[in-house]
Image 1 (spheres, rainbow, N blue to C red):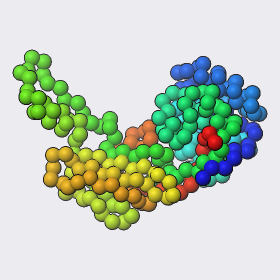
Image 2: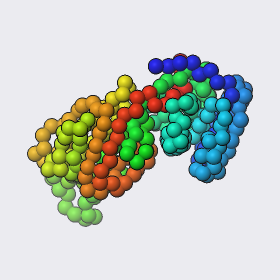
Image 3: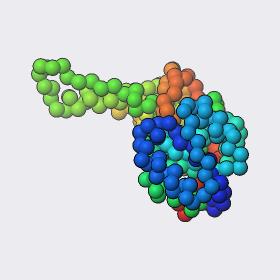
Image 4: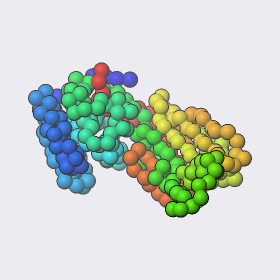
Length: 267
């Protein structure tokens, strides 16, 4: 559901990585926003200063100029202080921003800045875990970065193509043993190795859950379902939430918070 973004006063928070990586896009965003609204521009130099600036926003609508990590940082801070439901966020993506685009933020400094000024507020779900962390987009277990690459020794006799393909597939997709509970019901247990688990909020208070069994184990077919609460148990597993890899943990529960935050997107 979308409503009009009525606030005319903006707090433009420019992430340091954006200033260092693409100063031209930052300048364009500042010019467009300042021309269209009363904008206070802040240049925090550290995560701590970022938090202080956001906490002193007053009645101004925060506009994050930066990448996905900056957006997640802002949402996490507001959630931690229990201010997320009452604060509408806007974003101009500068840097890696695939998450922001998936949420409806247009690419490009000009288009995104115009959406900040002329767009509407969309209420979005997110995942909240039992350590008070949040996930805006996709949760992946294990993170892709945990997968290893195996190459053939220099000078080795080339293996048969089918064997080389098998070795590479095993190398890229290690098995993990996890117990996954969906809304209190166990759908896969530690005796069934899995290749990956993904959880993504899809709206209306539910998340899409996919559990892929290990390709070379007799562990049945993939599971695709929806859930409001997901609990994963295993031995020292890592997970990737949006742009950040966390862990190791042995147990974590995520619940879907419906309409927990507002993001300004094009009408």
